[in-house]
Image 1 (cartoon, rainbow, N blue to C red):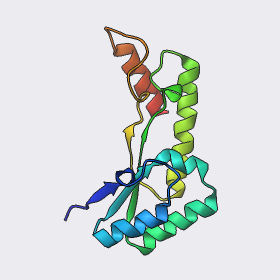
Image 2: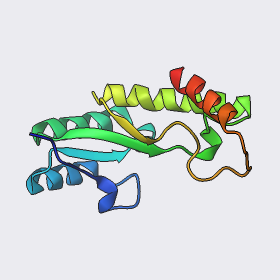
Image 3: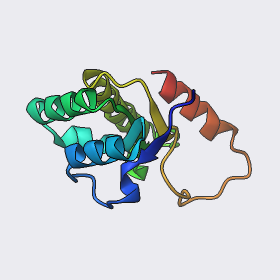
Length: 136
């Protein structure tokens, strides 16, 4: 049977919410998966991450992660320094997801969230930068 999940931000708008509370809530509602913003992991120490990971295990909840990549970390940017910063930022997030034993990162992780502040007719260079960055 397919697993059913829900995004924690269905209930809250901030990233530093009580993740354990929502793990218990979704378990009680019959969900299998709780998705939350991956960026929040960067603000947590290992003991907090351990607490969340254990609560998920205890409640039979799989954690998944998503993000909307801040434009200052745009891995498709024409600016090499912005791309490099974005690659390092994503590496830190993926490392944290690995620590959480996570297997899924979704969302806008291939370019900056929202519309760029420039217009292009040919997106091939943007796509090229994005592919190269994500591969790294």
